[in-house]
Picture 1: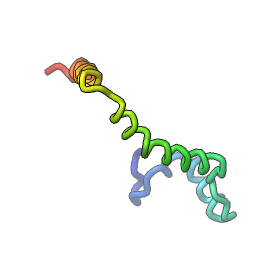
Picture 2: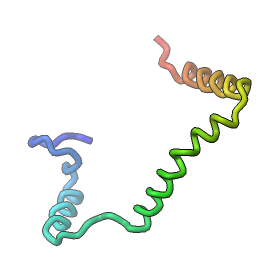
Picture 3: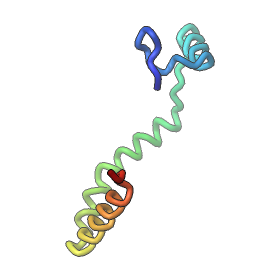
Picture 4: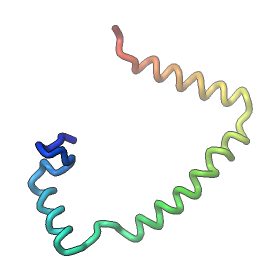
Length: 80
């Protein structure tokens, strides 16, 4: 996002600035309880998901995934 002259990011849009001012004056928060709960559950699952997946992958499958990822990265690399 572009920085404003005072260095505050994200408040260059008049509508976002108005929303921010009204939210601060009324003391309302923009947090959604259902998304907070979903975020907490996601964090719990993500912590053990990667380790469980790594434990179940064979060396050959890990190698195939790594080769595919490298090929994709090199395909997207800018040509100089």
